[in-house]
Image (cartoon, rainbow, N blue to C red):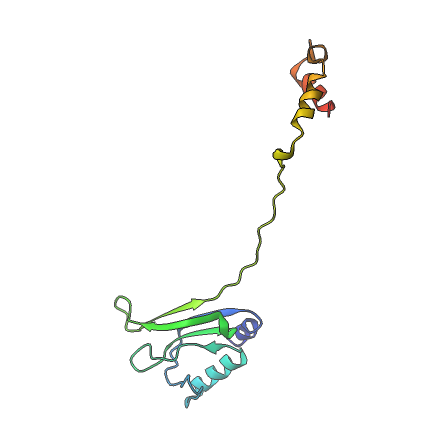
Length: 147
């Protein structure tokens, strides 16, 4: 878990779950038990903020939501248990920043076409003389050469 915390401390993250550390006082970050103190130290060394301050099972704060940075999670609310669970459920908002990945697509603007000039140029070509007695593929090659 220590290695995972080192990795997490360098990134934005949110971690949530039932951690079963019911003796930690999250308002003051104090605890009596050795396991709880080690867990607190781990959280503090990972620069994680714990957002749940109200009990989630009986009088204990067991279900926790951590984030780094602090602003990643907000609007934490403790709600009634869902289904047959004996734990309250936690509702919160998570802020996600996205990068604008849309690329501008190049498109032709046919509104600015010089259609009168195109008509004049096409009308000046003797198509019958140019394409007569030729195969379709040969006509295609000839028309491409007219650019």
